[in-house]
Length: 220
Length: 220
DNA sequence: CTAATAGTGTCTCTGAGACACTATCTA
DNA sequence: TAGATAGTGTCTCAGAGACACTATTAG
Image (cartoon, rainbow over all chains, first blue to last red):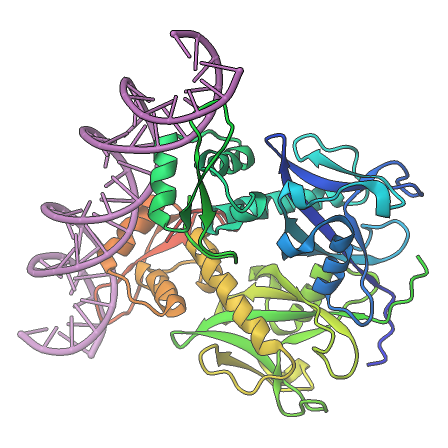
Protein backbone atom coordinates (compact mmCIF):
# COMPACT_ATOMS: atom_id res chain seq x y z
CA UNK A 1 0.00 0.00 0.00
CA UNK A 2 3.00 2.32 -0.13
CA UNK A 3 2.70 2.79 -3.87
CA UNK A 4 3.69 6.35 -4.60
CA UNK A 5 1.08 8.08 -6.64
CA UNK A 6 0.76 11.74 -7.44
CA UNK A 7 -2.74 12.00 -8.87
CA UNK A 8 -5.47 14.24 -7.54
CA UNK A 9 -9.11 13.39 -7.75
CA UNK A 10 -11.84 15.90 -8.54
CA UNK A 11 -15.54 15.94 -9.40
CA UNK A 12 -17.25 18.07 -12.03
CA UNK A 13 -20.98 18.60 -12.26
CA UNK A 14 -22.88 18.97 -15.50
CA UNK A 15 -26.00 20.73 -14.24
CA UNK A 16 -28.82 20.61 -16.78
CA UNK A 17 -31.95 22.68 -16.76
CA UNK A 18 -34.42 23.95 -19.32
CA UNK A 19 -34.69 27.69 -19.74
CA UNK A 20 -36.37 29.68 -22.51
CA UNK A 21 -37.30 26.45 -24.27
CA UNK A 22 -33.72 25.29 -24.57
CA UNK A 23 -31.49 22.88 -22.72
CA UNK A 24 -29.01 24.84 -20.62
CA UNK A 25 -26.00 23.91 -18.55
CA UNK A 26 -24.55 25.73 -15.55
CA UNK A 27 -21.07 27.16 -16.05
CA UNK A 28 -18.50 29.00 -13.98
CA UNK A 29 -16.13 31.58 -15.37
CA UNK A 30 -12.50 31.19 -14.36
CA UNK A 31 -10.76 34.21 -12.92
CA UNK A 32 -7.27 32.74 -12.70
CA UNK A 33 -4.82 31.23 -15.11
CA UNK A 34 -4.73 28.87 -16.84
CA UNK A 35 -7.76 29.44 -19.06
CA UNK A 36 -8.54 32.72 -17.30
CA UNK A 37 -11.85 34.12 -18.55
CA UNK A 38 -12.92 30.80 -20.04
CA UNK A 39 -15.74 28.71 -18.65
CA UNK A 40 -15.77 25.44 -16.74
CA UNK A 41 -18.15 23.11 -15.05
CA UNK A 42 -18.68 23.59 -11.35
CA UNK A 43 -16.42 21.17 -9.52
CA UNK A 44 -13.54 20.70 -7.16
CA UNK A 45 -11.34 18.29 -5.32
CA UNK A 46 -12.71 15.35 -3.39
CA UNK A 47 -12.08 15.44 0.35
CA UNK A 48 -10.55 12.43 2.11
CA UNK A 49 -13.64 11.78 4.20
CA UNK A 50 -16.41 12.10 1.62
CA UNK A 51 -17.54 9.78 -1.15
CA UNK A 52 -17.40 10.93 -4.75
CA UNK A 53 -21.12 11.45 -4.79
CA UNK A 54 -21.01 13.45 -1.57
CA UNK A 55 -18.36 15.65 -3.13
CA UNK A 56 -20.63 16.24 -6.10
CA UNK A 57 -23.54 17.07 -3.77
CA UNK A 58 -21.39 19.45 -1.74
CA UNK A 59 -20.56 21.44 -4.84
CA UNK A 60 -24.15 21.34 -6.00
CA UNK A 61 -25.52 22.75 -2.75
CA UNK A 62 -23.93 26.09 -3.50
CA UNK A 63 -25.97 26.58 -6.62
CA UNK A 64 -29.15 24.60 -6.27
CA UNK A 65 -31.94 23.41 -4.08
CA UNK A 66 -30.52 19.91 -3.87
CA UNK A 67 -33.75 18.41 -2.55
CA UNK A 68 -35.19 18.45 -6.04
CA UNK A 69 -32.15 17.45 -7.98
CA UNK A 70 -31.39 14.22 -9.75
CA UNK A 71 -27.70 13.33 -9.64
CA UNK A 72 -25.91 10.48 -11.34
CA UNK A 73 -22.32 9.67 -12.14
CA UNK A 74 -21.41 10.13 -15.77
CA UNK A 75 -17.85 9.11 -16.50
CA UNK A 76 -14.34 9.45 -15.16
CA UNK A 77 -11.98 11.40 -17.36
CA UNK A 78 -8.48 10.15 -16.79
CA UNK A 79 -6.23 11.33 -19.58
CA UNK A 80 -2.76 12.29 -18.39
CA UNK A 81 -2.71 15.80 -19.83
CA UNK A 82 -6.26 16.93 -19.31
CA UNK A 83 -5.16 19.58 -16.83
CA UNK A 84 -1.95 21.47 -17.65
CA UNK A 85 -1.16 22.14 -13.98
CA UNK A 86 -0.89 18.60 -12.71
CA UNK A 87 -2.37 15.14 -13.01
CA UNK A 88 -6.02 15.47 -12.13
CA UNK A 89 -8.56 12.74 -12.70
CA UNK A 90 -12.13 13.95 -12.69
CA UNK A 91 -15.30 12.00 -12.12
CA UNK A 92 -18.17 13.84 -13.73
CA UNK A 93 -21.74 13.85 -12.48
CA UNK A 94 -24.89 14.90 -14.24
CA UNK A 95 -27.43 16.92 -12.29
CA UNK A 96 -30.91 17.47 -13.67
CA UNK A 97 -32.96 20.22 -12.12
CA UNK A 98 -35.92 22.46 -12.68
CA UNK A 99 -34.94 25.99 -13.50
CA UNK A 100 -36.76 27.42 -10.50
CA UNK A 101 -34.61 25.33 -8.12
CA UNK A 102 -31.43 26.76 -9.54
CA UNK A 103 -30.23 29.84 -7.70
CA UNK A 104 -27.59 30.70 -10.23
CA UNK A 105 -26.38 33.99 -8.97
CA UNK A 106 -22.83 34.81 -8.12
CA UNK A 107 -23.69 35.75 -4.53
CA UNK A 108 -22.02 32.77 -2.84
CA UNK A 109 -19.48 32.57 -5.53
CA UNK A 110 -16.28 34.39 -6.17
CA UNK A 111 -16.46 33.55 -9.83
CA UNK A 112 -19.40 34.35 -12.04
CA UNK A 113 -22.01 31.74 -12.65
CA UNK A 114 -24.27 31.47 -15.66
CA UNK A 115 -26.42 29.04 -17.58
CA UNK A 116 -25.67 28.59 -21.27
CA UNK A 117 -27.59 26.81 -23.96
CA UNK A 118 -25.79 23.58 -24.82
CA UNK A 119 -26.11 24.63 -28.46
CA UNK A 120 -24.27 27.85 -27.84
CA UNK A 121 -21.48 27.22 -25.36
CA UNK A 122 -18.82 29.82 -24.63
CA UNK A 123 -15.14 28.98 -24.82
CA UNK A 124 -14.64 26.08 -22.45
CA UNK A 125 -11.54 25.34 -20.40
CA UNK A 126 -9.90 21.92 -20.03
CA UNK A 127 -11.91 19.05 -21.55
CA UNK A 128 -15.16 20.36 -20.12
CA UNK A 129 -16.91 20.73 -23.45
CA UNK A 130 -16.32 17.02 -24.00
CA UNK A 131 -17.80 16.31 -20.58
CA UNK A 132 -20.89 18.35 -21.40
CA UNK A 133 -21.36 16.52 -24.68
CA UNK A 134 -21.08 13.23 -22.88
CA UNK A 135 -23.72 14.42 -20.44
CA UNK A 136 -26.07 15.49 -23.22
CA UNK A 137 -25.88 12.02 -24.73
CA UNK A 138 -26.58 10.41 -21.37
CA UNK A 139 -29.53 12.71 -20.78
CA UNK A 140 -30.96 11.85 -24.20
CA UNK A 141 -30.60 8.16 -23.48
CA UNK A 142 -32.26 8.42 -20.09
CA UNK A 143 -35.15 10.36 -21.59
CA UNK A 144 -35.77 7.40 -23.87
CA UNK A 145 -36.11 4.79 -21.19
CA UNK A 146 -36.80 6.51 -17.85
CA UNK A 147 -39.03 9.16 -16.31
CA UNK A 148 -36.07 11.53 -15.87
CA UNK A 149 -38.06 14.30 -17.59
CA UNK A 150 -39.77 14.94 -14.25
CA UNK A 151 -36.64 16.59 -12.89
CA UNK A 152 -36.78 19.20 -15.63
CA UNK A 153 -40.42 20.02 -14.90
CA UNK A 154 -42.36 21.55 -12.01
CA UNK A 155 -44.41 19.15 -9.90
CA UNK A 156 -47.52 19.91 -11.92
CA UNK A 157 -47.15 20.27 -15.64
CA UNK A 158 -49.22 20.13 -18.80
CA UNK A 159 -48.78 17.51 -21.48
CA UNK A 160 -47.55 20.27 -23.77
CA UNK A 161 -44.80 21.10 -21.30
CA UNK A 162 -43.77 17.47 -21.12
CA UNK A 163 -43.77 17.18 -24.88
CA UNK A 164 -41.69 20.32 -25.06
CA UNK A 165 -38.98 18.74 -22.89
CA UNK A 166 -38.60 15.97 -25.44
CA UNK A 167 -38.74 18.31 -28.39
CA UNK A 168 -36.14 20.64 -26.94
CA UNK A 169 -33.64 17.95 -26.07
CA UNK A 170 -34.06 15.79 -29.14
CA UNK A 171 -34.40 18.83 -31.38
CA UNK A 172 -37.32 17.17 -33.08
CA UNK A 173 -41.04 17.95 -33.12
CA UNK A 174 -43.51 15.23 -32.25
CA UNK A 175 -47.11 14.76 -33.24
CA UNK A 176 -49.33 15.84 -30.36
CA UNK A 177 -51.78 12.95 -30.64
CA UNK A 178 -49.12 10.27 -30.95
CA UNK A 179 -47.10 11.73 -28.10
CA UNK A 180 -50.08 11.79 -25.75
CA UNK A 181 -51.16 8.31 -26.75
CA UNK A 182 -47.73 6.95 -25.92
CA UNK A 183 -47.30 8.78 -22.62
CA UNK A 184 -50.74 7.76 -21.44
CA UNK A 185 -50.12 4.13 -22.34
CA UNK A 186 -46.97 4.17 -20.24
CA UNK A 187 -48.99 4.87 -17.13
CA UNK A 188 -46.26 6.96 -15.51
CA UNK A 189 -48.19 10.21 -15.04
CA UNK A 190 -51.61 11.01 -13.63
CA UNK A 191 -54.03 13.91 -13.77
CA UNK A 192 -53.68 16.07 -10.67
CA UNK A 193 -57.24 17.38 -10.81
CA UNK A 194 -55.97 20.89 -11.46
CA UNK A 195 -55.87 23.04 -14.54
CA UNK A 196 -53.93 26.06 -15.64
CA UNK A 197 -55.38 29.40 -14.52
CA UNK A 198 -55.47 32.83 -16.10
CA UNK A 199 -54.18 31.68 -19.43
CA UNK A 200 -55.40 33.31 -22.58
CA UNK A 201 -56.50 30.05 -24.14
CA UNK A 202 -58.12 26.80 -23.17
CA UNK A 203 -56.48 25.88 -19.84
CA UNK A 204 -54.46 22.69 -19.91
CA UNK A 205 -54.95 19.87 -17.44
CA UNK A 206 -52.02 19.60 -15.06
CA UNK A 207 -50.41 16.21 -14.54
CA UNK A 208 -47.90 14.79 -12.09
CA UNK A 209 -45.50 11.87 -12.22
CA UNK A 210 -46.69 8.84 -10.28
CA UNK A 211 -43.21 8.12 -8.96
CA UNK A 212 -40.80 10.76 -7.73
CA UNK A 213 -37.84 8.45 -8.21
CA UNK A 214 -36.11 7.54 -11.41
CA UNK A 215 -37.97 4.62 -12.96
CA UNK A 216 -37.08 2.59 -16.02
CA UNK A 217 -39.83 2.71 -18.64
CA UNK A 218 -39.37 2.43 -22.38
CA UNK A 219 -40.57 5.70 -23.83
CA UNK A 220 -39.07 6.25 -27.27
CA UNK B 1 -3.29 23.33 -6.44
CA UNK B 2 -1.75 22.57 -3.08
CA UNK B 3 -4.93 20.96 -1.80
CA UNK B 4 -3.87 18.10 0.43
CA UNK B 5 -5.56 14.91 -0.59
CA UNK B 6 -4.81 11.40 0.51
CA UNK B 7 -6.75 9.27 -1.95
CA UNK B 8 -5.27 6.61 -4.17
CA UNK B 9 -6.66 5.74 -7.56
CA UNK B 10 -6.92 2.20 -8.91
CA UNK B 11 -8.49 0.38 -11.83
CA UNK B 12 -10.32 -2.96 -11.71
CA UNK B 13 -11.15 -5.05 -14.75
CA UNK B 14 -14.28 -7.13 -15.10
CA UNK B 15 -13.16 -9.58 -17.78
CA UNK B 16 -16.08 -11.42 -19.36
CA UNK B 17 -15.91 -14.50 -21.50
CA UNK B 18 -18.18 -17.40 -22.36
CA UNK B 19 -17.04 -20.84 -21.31
CA UNK B 20 -19.02 -24.09 -21.17
CA UNK B 21 -22.12 -22.25 -22.29
CA UNK B 22 -22.06 -19.85 -19.38
CA UNK B 23 -20.95 -16.28 -18.82
CA UNK B 24 -17.72 -16.28 -16.85
CA UNK B 25 -15.60 -13.61 -15.22
CA UNK B 26 -11.87 -13.66 -14.53
CA UNK B 27 -10.91 -13.57 -10.86
CA UNK B 28 -7.72 -13.44 -8.82
CA UNK B 29 -7.32 -15.09 -5.45
CA UNK B 30 -5.76 -12.90 -2.76
CA UNK B 31 -2.81 -14.34 -0.89
CA UNK B 32 -2.43 -11.55 1.66
CA UNK B 33 -4.60 -9.94 4.27
CA UNK B 34 -7.11 -8.42 4.29
CA UNK B 35 -9.51 -10.84 2.63
CA UNK B 36 -6.77 -13.44 2.26
CA UNK B 37 -8.06 -16.40 0.26
CA UNK B 38 -10.99 -14.45 -1.11
CA UNK B 39 -11.31 -13.44 -4.74
CA UNK B 40 -11.02 -10.09 -6.45
CA UNK B 41 -11.04 -8.57 -9.88
CA UNK B 42 -7.73 -8.10 -11.57
CA UNK B 43 -6.61 -4.54 -10.98
CA UNK B 44 -4.08 -2.22 -9.49
CA UNK B 45 -2.98 1.34 -8.95
CA UNK B 46 -2.82 3.86 -11.75
CA UNK B 47 0.63 5.18 -12.56
CA UNK B 48 1.26 8.91 -12.78
CA UNK B 49 2.11 8.81 -16.46
CA UNK B 50 -0.64 6.60 -17.84
CA UNK B 51 -4.30 7.28 -18.49
CA UNK B 52 -6.96 5.28 -16.68
CA UNK B 53 -7.64 3.25 -19.79
CA UNK B 54 -3.94 2.56 -20.29
CA UNK B 55 -3.77 1.31 -16.72
CA UNK B 56 -6.65 -1.05 -17.43
CA UNK B 57 -4.93 -2.28 -20.60
CA UNK B 58 -1.66 -2.79 -18.77
CA UNK B 59 -3.35 -5.10 -16.29
CA UNK B 60 -5.23 -6.86 -19.04
CA UNK B 61 -2.10 -7.66 -21.02
CA UNK B 62 -1.00 -10.09 -18.37
CA UNK B 63 -4.00 -12.32 -18.85
CA UNK B 64 -5.25 -11.82 -22.37
CA UNK B 65 -4.45 -11.32 -25.99
CA UNK B 66 -5.41 -7.66 -25.85
CA UNK B 67 -5.63 -7.33 -29.62
CA UNK B 68 -9.00 -9.02 -29.58
CA UNK B 69 -10.45 -7.47 -26.49
CA UNK B 70 -13.19 -4.92 -26.12
CA UNK B 71 -12.61 -2.58 -23.20
CA UNK B 72 -14.89 0.13 -21.84
CA UNK B 73 -15.10 2.09 -18.64
CA UNK B 74 -17.90 0.98 -16.34
CA UNK B 75 -18.14 3.13 -13.24
CA UNK B 76 -16.02 4.70 -10.57
CA UNK B 77 -16.58 3.38 -7.08
CA UNK B 78 -15.79 6.10 -4.61
CA UNK B 79 -17.23 5.18 -1.22
CA UNK B 80 -15.00 6.17 1.67
CA UNK B 81 -14.75 2.76 3.31
CA UNK B 82 -14.66 0.44 0.31
CA UNK B 83 -11.11 -0.63 1.15
CA UNK B 84 -10.29 -1.13 4.85
CA UNK B 85 -6.62 -0.27 4.38
CA UNK B 86 -6.93 3.26 3.07
CA UNK B 87 -8.98 5.49 0.85
CA UNK B 88 -8.92 3.96 -2.59
CA UNK B 89 -11.15 5.05 -5.42
CA UNK B 90 -11.45 2.53 -8.20
CA UNK B 91 -12.49 3.03 -11.78
CA UNK B 92 -13.80 -0.23 -13.15
CA UNK B 93 -13.50 -1.37 -16.74
CA UNK B 94 -15.34 -4.12 -18.55
CA UNK B 95 -13.36 -6.33 -20.92
CA UNK B 96 -15.15 -8.69 -23.30
CA UNK B 97 -13.11 -11.44 -24.84
CA UNK B 98 -13.34 -14.76 -26.58
CA UNK B 99 -12.35 -17.63 -24.36
CA UNK B 100 -9.52 -18.71 -26.66
CA UNK B 101 -7.82 -15.31 -26.26
CA UNK B 102 -7.74 -15.62 -22.51
CA UNK B 103 -4.56 -17.21 -21.22
CA UNK B 104 -5.80 -17.61 -17.71
CA UNK B 105 -3.01 -19.52 -16.13
CA UNK B 106 -1.11 -18.47 -13.09
CA UNK B 107 2.23 -18.57 -14.93
CA UNK B 108 2.86 -14.82 -14.96
CA UNK B 109 0.98 -14.39 -11.78
CA UNK B 110 1.93 -14.80 -8.18
CA UNK B 111 -1.69 -15.26 -7.23
CA UNK B 112 -3.96 -17.84 -8.75
CA UNK B 113 -6.20 -16.88 -11.59
CA UNK B 114 -9.47 -18.52 -12.54
CA UNK B 115 -12.68 -17.90 -14.44
CA UNK B 116 -15.94 -18.31 -12.55
CA UNK B 117 -19.49 -18.39 -13.77
CA UNK B 118 -21.18 -15.13 -12.82
CA UNK B 119 -24.00 -17.26 -11.43
CA UNK B 120 -21.68 -19.05 -9.07
CA UNK B 121 -19.14 -16.59 -7.74
CA UNK B 122 -16.80 -17.50 -4.88
CA UNK B 123 -16.50 -15.28 -1.83
CA UNK B 124 -15.49 -11.87 -3.14
CA UNK B 125 -13.28 -9.32 -1.40
CA UNK B 126 -14.05 -5.60 -1.12
CA UNK B 127 -17.02 -4.43 -3.18
CA UNK B 128 -15.97 -6.49 -6.17
CA UNK B 129 -19.15 -8.53 -6.38
CA UNK B 130 -21.05 -5.27 -6.75
CA UNK B 131 -18.68 -4.25 -9.54
CA UNK B 132 -19.25 -7.54 -11.35
CA UNK B 133 -23.01 -7.16 -11.08
CA UNK B 134 -22.75 -3.68 -12.47
CA UNK B 135 -20.72 -5.09 -15.36
CA UNK B 136 -23.25 -7.82 -16.07
CA UNK B 137 -25.99 -5.21 -16.37
CA UNK B 138 -23.86 -3.13 -18.72
CA UNK B 139 -23.07 -6.16 -20.84
CA UNK B 140 -26.76 -7.05 -21.10
CA UNK B 141 -27.58 -3.52 -22.14
CA UNK B 142 -24.89 -3.42 -24.78
CA UNK B 143 -26.06 -6.74 -26.19
CA UNK B 144 -29.44 -5.15 -26.76
CA UNK B 145 -28.28 -2.26 -28.84
CA UNK B 146 -24.78 -3.01 -30.17
CA UNK B 147 -22.82 -5.74 -31.93
CA UNK B 148 -20.76 -6.40 -28.78
CA UNK B 149 -21.55 -10.13 -29.06
CA UNK B 150 -18.74 -10.39 -31.62
CA UNK B 151 -16.14 -10.08 -28.86
CA UNK B 152 -17.49 -13.21 -27.21
CA UNK B 153 -17.32 -15.22 -30.43
CA UNK B 154 -14.59 -16.47 -32.74
CA UNK B 155 -14.20 -14.62 -36.06
CA UNK B 156 -16.36 -17.19 -37.83
CA UNK B 157 -19.41 -18.46 -36.02
CA UNK B 158 -22.71 -20.15 -36.71
CA UNK B 159 -26.06 -18.54 -36.09
CA UNK B 160 -26.62 -21.08 -33.34
CA UNK B 161 -23.48 -19.90 -31.59
CA UNK B 162 -24.62 -16.31 -31.84
CA UNK B 163 -28.04 -17.19 -30.52
CA UNK B 164 -26.39 -19.06 -27.68
CA UNK B 165 -24.54 -15.92 -26.58
CA UNK B 166 -27.86 -14.15 -26.13
CA UNK B 167 -29.49 -17.11 -24.43
CA UNK B 168 -26.65 -17.58 -21.99
CA UNK B 169 -26.44 -13.97 -20.93
CA UNK B 170 -30.15 -13.22 -20.81
CA UNK B 171 -30.94 -16.64 -19.35
CA UNK B 172 -33.78 -16.96 -21.80
CA UNK B 173 -34.33 -19.18 -24.83
CA UNK B 174 -35.27 -17.63 -28.14
CA UNK B 175 -37.15 -19.04 -31.09
CA UNK B 176 -34.68 -20.00 -33.80
CA UNK B 177 -36.69 -18.65 -36.71
CA UNK B 178 -37.49 -15.34 -35.05
CA UNK B 179 -33.92 -14.89 -33.90
CA UNK B 180 -32.50 -15.45 -37.37
CA UNK B 181 -35.09 -13.23 -38.97
CA UNK B 182 -34.16 -10.39 -36.67
CA UNK B 183 -30.40 -10.77 -36.98
CA UNK B 184 -30.55 -10.99 -40.76
CA UNK B 185 -32.73 -7.89 -40.95
CA UNK B 186 -30.14 -5.97 -38.94
CA UNK B 187 -27.58 -6.48 -41.67
CA UNK B 188 -24.67 -6.63 -39.24
CA UNK B 189 -23.33 -10.09 -40.14
CA UNK B 190 -22.53 -11.78 -43.44
CA UNK B 191 -21.99 -15.32 -44.67
CA UNK B 192 -18.29 -16.09 -44.84
CA UNK B 193 -18.64 -18.74 -47.55
CA UNK B 194 -17.45 -21.42 -45.15
CA UNK B 195 -19.24 -24.14 -43.28
CA UNK B 196 -18.49 -26.24 -40.25
CA UNK B 197 -16.43 -29.38 -40.94
CA UNK B 198 -16.38 -32.82 -39.40
CA UNK B 199 -19.50 -32.32 -37.39
CA UNK B 200 -21.87 -35.18 -36.85
CA UNK B 201 -24.88 -33.29 -38.15
CA UNK B 202 -25.77 -30.89 -40.92
CA UNK B 203 -22.85 -28.41 -40.98
CA UNK B 204 -23.80 -24.85 -40.14
CA UNK B 205 -22.92 -21.91 -42.33
CA UNK B 206 -20.28 -19.74 -40.72
CA UNK B 207 -20.88 -16.00 -40.50
CA UNK B 208 -18.76 -12.99 -39.62
CA UNK B 209 -19.56 -9.53 -38.32
CA UNK B 210 -19.39 -6.86 -41.00
CA UNK B 211 -17.74 -4.39 -38.64
CA UNK B 212 -15.01 -5.27 -36.19
CA UNK B 213 -15.74 -2.20 -34.10
CA UNK B 214 -18.52 -1.67 -31.66
CA UNK B 215 -21.53 -0.39 -33.59
CA UNK B 216 -24.85 0.78 -32.28
CA UNK B 217 -27.74 -1.27 -33.67
CA UNK B 218 -31.05 -1.95 -31.98
CA UNK B 219 -31.22 -5.71 -31.50
CA UNK B 220 -33.68 -6.57 -28.77
C1' DC C 1 -30.88 -45.55 -41.01
C1' DT C 2 -30.13 -43.10 -36.77
C1' DA C 3 -28.74 -39.25 -34.16
C1' DA C 4 -27.81 -34.66 -34.06
C1' DT C 5 -28.20 -29.95 -35.31
C1' DA C 6 -29.23 -26.56 -39.32
C1' DG C 7 -32.45 -24.11 -41.64
C1' DT C 8 -36.91 -22.11 -43.25
C1' DG C 9 -42.42 -19.18 -43.85
C1' DT C 10 -46.93 -17.69 -42.27
C1' DC C 11 -50.19 -15.69 -39.35
C1' DT C 12 -51.63 -12.65 -35.68
C1' DC C 13 -51.24 -8.88 -32.79
C1' DT C 14 -49.31 -4.67 -31.09
C1' DG C 15 -47.20 -0.30 -31.38
C1' DA C 16 -45.46 3.69 -34.36
C1' DG C 17 -46.50 7.25 -37.19
C1' DA C 18 -49.36 10.07 -40.51
C1' DC C 19 -53.07 13.00 -40.44
C1' DA C 20 -57.47 17.50 -39.23
C1' DC C 21 -60.75 19.14 -36.59
C1' DT C 22 -63.31 20.85 -32.28
C1' DA C 23 -63.01 22.89 -27.36
C1' DT C 24 -62.13 26.44 -24.02
C1' DC C 25 -60.23 30.30 -22.19
C1' DT C 26 -58.98 35.81 -22.09
C1' DA C 27 -59.29 40.28 -23.77
C1' DT D 1 -65.32 37.22 -31.85
C1' DA D 2 -60.43 36.81 -32.45
C1' DG D 3 -56.38 34.75 -30.92
C1' DA D 4 -54.18 31.25 -28.65
C1' DT D 5 -53.35 26.63 -27.09
C1' DA D 6 -55.70 22.10 -25.49
C1' DG D 7 -57.44 17.96 -26.72
C1' DT D 8 -58.99 13.90 -29.44
C1' DG D 9 -59.56 8.88 -33.20
C1' DT D 10 -58.57 6.16 -37.28
C1' DC D 11 -55.92 3.96 -40.62
C1' DT D 12 -51.75 1.83 -42.36
C1' DC D 13 -47.54 -0.43 -41.96
C1' DA D 14 -43.68 -2.77 -39.74
C1' DG D 15 -41.81 -5.66 -36.42
C1' DA D 16 -42.41 -9.22 -32.55
C1' DG D 17 -43.66 -13.55 -31.33
C1' DA D 18 -46.03 -18.16 -31.78
C1' DC D 19 -45.55 -22.20 -34.21
C1' DA D 20 -43.67 -27.48 -37.20
C1' DC D 21 -41.41 -29.49 -40.56
C1' DT D 22 -37.48 -30.71 -43.93
C1' DA D 23 -32.21 -30.83 -44.89
C1' DT D 24 -27.58 -32.48 -44.25
C1' DT D 25 -23.90 -34.56 -42.15
C1' DA D 26 -21.02 -38.66 -39.61
C1' DG D 27 -20.97 -43.03 -38.00
